[in-house]
Image (cartoon, rainbow, N blue to C red; front, side, top):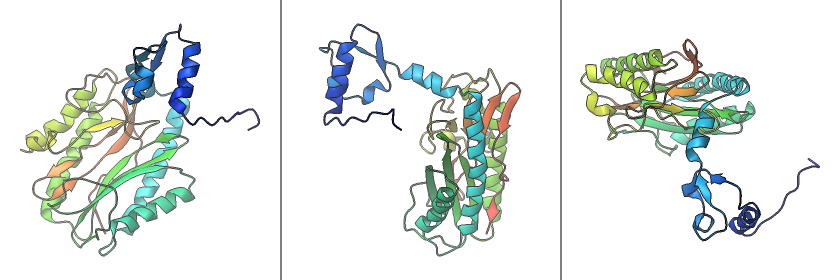
Length: 290
């Protein structure tokens, strides 16, 4: 564009410091301040940079209608991309080929970015990782967290498919995750906290004697915020007291290890409304078989 001026700075921290020197009498903040070069935060500078991380986090959690519209469009693409993923699962394929199918599909739809991790195997699999050359075997649980971006906004879907027929143990285990997801989404409404949603999910696992597997030893979060980043605040954990308000976008996902079958995932993106949760994902909540 003709009205944009591009400047190259060999020492970007120094160049920023020069600019900040000119406005040193203003109140300035940076976010996340802890990631800045130490030179910029040194107390000997003529300017002082407050930590604006909490302020920016609050702003990022609250979405305008146009942002929600982009998130809804991303959710439609996420559903379609998961259908591509599921169709590509078969014994003998390496993980990276399966992820490549999804990436090719998303680029063809004009989606510029996608955060995606995958797992395949049984009780030996403790979580999901970037794709490797590990080959899918018959009977594997194949999991993914698929997070496409539309107009700068991310949406996530988490699902599990079996490469073959699901065993009775896999079905019983999956039923717990589906119950936990439904409990978590039912808890989403204005005024409740992120902790309330996490507790609703975790209580299902506790009821089934699986309380150990909702701890930090086995799982990181029970969901998180979505928007300009694929993983943002609020984190859905029992010690996070952030209240939910209309316009927040979240993924609710009781993803964790199951001692009988291995790592399982199930999660849907939602928008907090005045009346509860608007679920954005339309992919069935079932243990798929291919």
